[in-house]
Amino acid sequence: MKETALVFIPARNEAASIGAVVRGCREAGFAVTVIDDASTDATASLARQAGAEVLRTRGPHHGKTAALRQALLTAPADCDWFFFLDGDGQHDPADLARFWAAREDADLVVGNRLPDAARMPLLRRWTNRVMSAVLRRSGIADSQCGFRLVRRAWLGAWLPGGHHFQFESEMALLAAARATRVVNLPIAATYAREESKIVPLRDAVNFGRCLWLQRSEGRDGSPLPSLSFDGREGTRVPTTQSL
Image 1: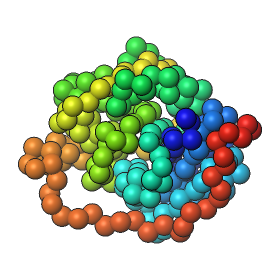
Image 2: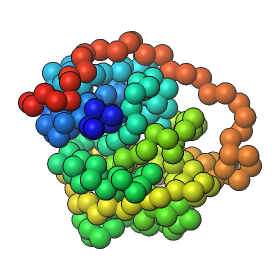
Image 3: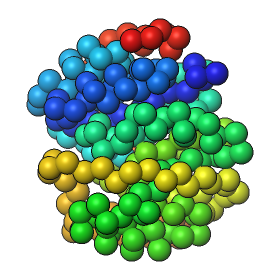
Image 4: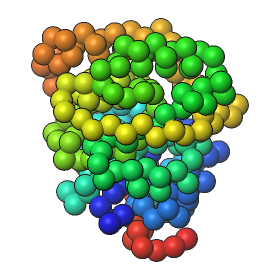
């Protein structure tokens, strides 16, 4: 059954952690695609060495949401489930089995760091609580957690419209707008000393724009440009192989 799932990991300059994250996902039995968003370090080569397929964006940095949009557009037709997790090591691949076990009666399984919120950096904790309160109709307790498992049939033809860190908010708005079975799965709030890529003012404006677009027909109607990719690099290792 695990061959029906695919792990998406957006990454930019995550050479210090991406290899361990990919290996953990592969050891859990899942195929992995890393979307390398114009990294200037060895993120792409280390992800390939660890067993991931790599999509590399051309040109400048596009942003997490834009990269995941393109990944969804190129996802294989035989995948029924999509995992999403970050490449900086804050999401433990060992939890993939718990997410997978919780999927049967769910459309959306989302990590919930709130029981462990004291370990979150203060700004992230405050931002997350505010956004989660605004998006409470979605049924997602920790709306900004990027660790999630999504049923493809529920997702349908939906694609995110933003560029930077709107992905989780846009999906929460989708969950609030349609019938959604949500499972909130407690996970540890793990933060090392890595520098956050969130830009508070920019991302607050983008969050407001998500809400405005959702309330005015969900989108502004203008097509978003597709990203250019250097092509698929690496080989998708069969999910039955143990590493």
